[in-house]
Image (cartoon, rainbow, N blue to C red; front, side):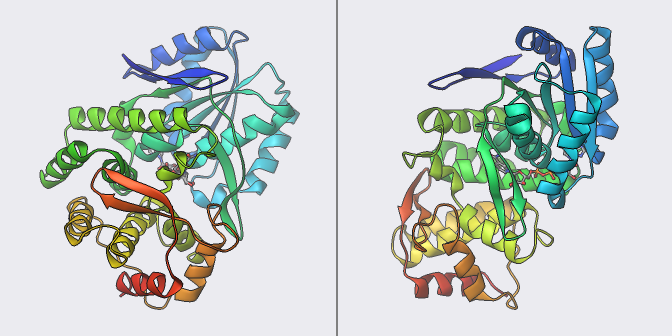
Length: 361
Ligand SMILES: NC(=O)c1ccc[n+]([C@@H]2O[C@H](COP(=O)([O-])OP(=O)(O)OC[C@H]3O[C@@H](n4cnc5c(N)ncnc54)[C@H](O)[C@@H]3O)[C@@H](O)[C@H]2O)c1
């Protein structure tokens, strides 16, 4: 069992790495003295793991309730939350219960926001089951849901008691969602560590990624994320904004395609290519850096472009409404070189539109 301690000003919590779900129960006992648990999961994840975890909890005389909602980004809504609040109240979930988010980023974000608001806050445990959730969304306390006009618009910072990462869960994750998580991993590599970037690029060139590769990659990414969150928990100093590398464009793309055409990671991969093109256009990075970014994306299997039919001005305007934009001015996170990125960079609209043109087919 490995552990990373995430140290925050007001509280600290561990990210626990274990292949054994019994360790999860041990940590429940350590952190949740009331032994009352409310599992929240989705239809895909629950069919593999919920019963087993419930059983382990019941053996230890925990009081257990569960709520399962339909899988998919389309469910990360206020409507799902509303159903959750009503269900919780109807079965008697009170402030002694802890919410356990068992699933990918959609479950983690929705259950996390539920935990932060229901009866003014219940304890929360994140049990990520997708690659993306393991390396990114379960860590750092960002929770929330989408509304029709924008992604993650309603939310809160709400830190869990602990995060439990069991990479064995990945055995049932389908390959397209595994690839989806790879985009966030590439994001960390470009952003923070040239050596890790080179290692990852070599791994992508092999036909098989071993279990040990996965474990090492996930552990390393959790370290990157924990380090950034520790330095800027609530995204005020600009450091945490670095994690949005590739995301300004990705969010606009997801919104314009109504979350239906691209998985989050696919949109992030296109967003990363977009900022690489943008950075090279304004000579913020050199051509070689842009090419290395293109290469790693292709090696990882990301070679999609966006449809020419998408309205480029709408994409531009959506980016202007991004949470990071100030008075309609988009603040980009751009690559300087592999292992180094900078936030809050402004780029002229005409250049932005040219870069969108380049990633369209
Ligand atoms: N809070 C944050 O800091 C943060 C960071 C990045 C992304 N996100 C959010 O995360 C979401 C995307 O997360 P995601 O890619 O995990 O999506 P997801 O939760 O929809 O999971 C992807 C799919 O895999 C299934 N699944 C998950 N684990 C499985 C397993 N072990 N076995 C079988 N099926 C499994 C899910 O049911 C779903 O169908 C987006 O909403 C994004 O906005 C949040």
